[in-house]
Image (tube, rainbow, N blue to C red; front, top):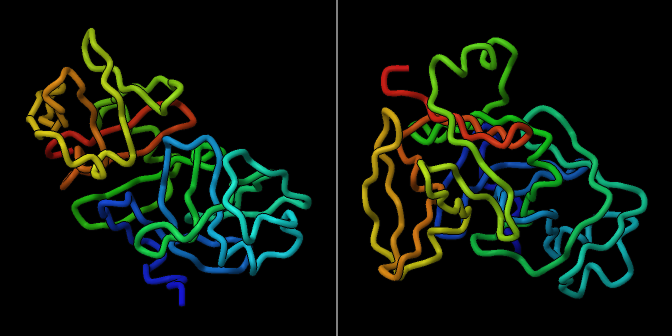
Length: 218
């Protein structure tokens, strides 16, 4: 049987399959993965079977292209429901994840991710006003494969699934006042993933294409 929900509403867990959070799809509590690499949210087959008005074959066939949802469905990460009008469909992801949350949701959210305590929160107006003074901005550019982070004169890809790429060496690189681990495949390929922020507090600000990394002592 699928595991529907094993996280507290404010909890995050990083595994090899990604960054896991608790989510609500309509009134169903599920375990989800945050996936900025994906343009469109993917719904796992067991969840699709529990949702009304799904496309006829969505609950039994993986789809490469998004299918329209009529009516739309609402997805909530922390405090606000967001409507999505299309989705992809697939099997249950690793770690029994029922929802792969893509940019169609994440570009409407600012999320505080505390990798030290394993907690997630929304960002209030007071937090937004102090971001610039307490954090180092890592600017993002959307590419065909996801996001690329501004890293001096040579942008570096940011992949939410970087932990799935075992053939790499992790090197420590200085970024502003911070040191971050960077994956290096030894053939000129470098990227950062969620593990770059281990022990740190960040704000994932995809509406403004930025990851705000809190300075030490911030």
